[in-house]
Image: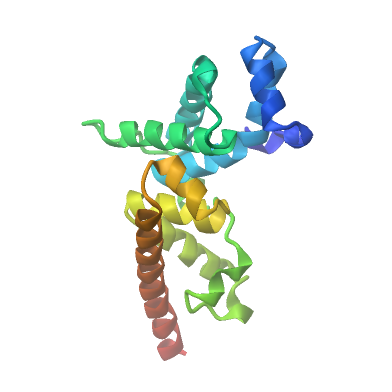
Length: 206
């Protein structure tokens, strides 16, 4: 679904999008979705781990945002506000007594690169730069990210993959800057530990 979303809305400012939505102009909703749906979907998918629930979270996010747009005080950016709504929607689903629906699409289990993995990650997680583009290596990193606890995973996704600042991440999750820094440090340590073991095993097998 997201593959057909264009980037035509990227040139429209958040202020203009907000004003259009508040005035009842449906083009504002369309522009908001075009601009932020891919980012919200990636975050939702990283938390829910299946496409159906991720799409539901994304839809809930935009519906909630459009219904409460008059309450948006712009103390944070529109993107940060949407991330916060998406995170809360995902957490509500994950806390339900019944587990989320499991995908029956086998390609999801094999799609280790569903999240974009920045090239610079090899700097801190012991990835050999020359091997980083290998599908197996990128798949191992993607799997390691999915294995993180949700509280660490969401911080890692926002900071390292989506490129939010520490301040924006803190505002999105409604936590302190120190909490974000601590969770990001723990996420990196876990990933480094997992990936170091993987490469050690591979080297010993060669």
